[in-house]
Length: 295
Ligand code: GLU
Ligand code: ZN
Image 1 (cartoon, rainbow, N blue to C red):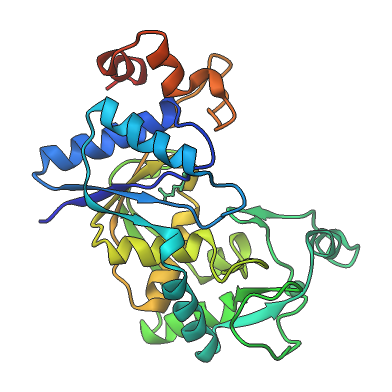
Image 2: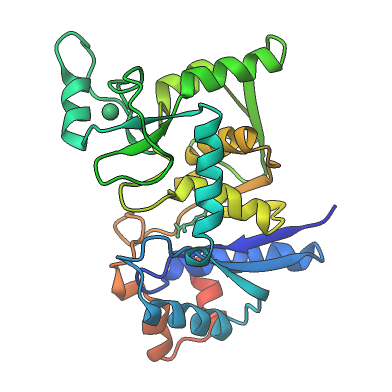
């Protein structure tokens, strides 16, 4: 079976040990399988991305000895693809316009009649459905006053009808989730509605979101194996749902454990102390980095 994987960093800060682990693992797996290792620059959020961070990514990967096949895909050049997918979902009545802000959502979730505390999913607080039936007219383009959300209940009902009664979505996990989930991971309509909800597929300032662009790009790059951190395990359920909606294949997933600091906290971009460039400046070699992350 073909093996195509990718490393998909956002140029919003320096790559740290956690990124190095993810990239080296994906690269090693591709090499062992005689496959392909691709790079994708996830720069949809132009307000946070910087060209110097992107340049540093190429530099760090080269230093680590991770060569990737050309061309490198840059999300900022694919806005028209994301907009087209959004239009299609809108035309298929899979979306609704939501004009709530975060405070409205939290308030609705903690309102006395709801009786339950705010529930959080992989995309933030689970949307309480306030705008779902308002039928606000709009085009499928970003508006400063709202976002487009998935009609999750309708989507899961249609999926169940098409699967003749079985309402399960699934994906193959070759690594493991944060609670050790591995093998065939199944989740049903109930789970999607209760734990994920009507997630937003675009932002107020752009005609896409992380979830929408990642599924379109994995498909466009022919990715067969997604290797990434366990922090994205839950989000995979969103991705599988979007893949079904958009008629895209679901790759095999390999979620890996996260590299943590001495206090057990996962590394963040602002953790400059763990930046690869810093270790490099202090004389570390790529072999030292491999040892540090346990590869
Ligand atoms: N751009 C994401 C990040 O840097 C990774 C997305 C993915 O691997 O699916 O966390
Ligand atoms: Zn709303």
